[in-house]
Length: 85
Image (cartoon, rainbow, N blue to C red):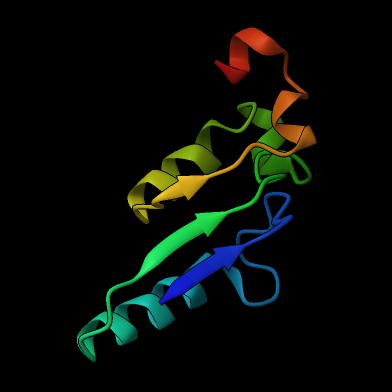
């Protein structure tokens, strides 16, 4: 099963949220499904949590959730190339 997020813009607890996604993923794994977690960009900018540490908290959260693939969107470059790298 491929599960993906898109244009989250630091919305950690808005709408479905990362916790809901983790719940679905874990439930699928418990049922024996292999899962792949993908984000297609614009995850580090948009809310205070992203601005305060220039996306570090979101990257840490995504690493804790064990995302398999993250494709940079245009906002991943908002804090400059050095930060992006």
